[in-house]
Length: 247
Image (cartoon, rainbow, N blue to C red; front, side):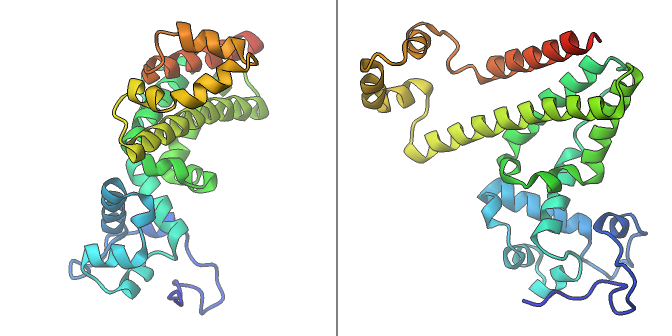
């Protein structure tokens, strides 16, 4: 389907970005469709039916407009994803009085995990879409600023921020994938999951090739405590940064 031309295209000038258009004054009251309404509707669809259900046709139906009406506001799926990410990421905040780099990054990390578990479709969003929105840029700005205040240069600060972000997203994506896998098979607990996978596990352990994993399987007491596992791993990452950089 052809996408409607955005303002500025016919004249040869660069079209305003999605975020520039979003910050412009609100349209006249008679205009029922706005970027805010589109974002809210798309998030509702994704939360209820999954990210794959968010199509321009499905969105238009939910909003009660023709599909081309939505295309006049967003260029396509990337714009739509960006609006969704930005809307839910507005919840990420750290109190203004928090100045320590570790406290700021840890707070954002814990909140981001909660956010992704509440909106699991975030786990499949392309990284550029996740990062390049006003709300996500505000998170990056706060993190980079607090690291710079502790003496880190621009390259080191970004490397630290990306290391923590990568851990958070990787851990949350794994947790969401496991939860989805269990739901697809009708397993309601870790015990049910392990029981269903027991034949594979017995064979693998029977080979004698994985003694460390066997020790974990037989001795671990927190196998289903994902929150503890996340916090412990996060603190290991932060401890390593502190030790490496002496901050």
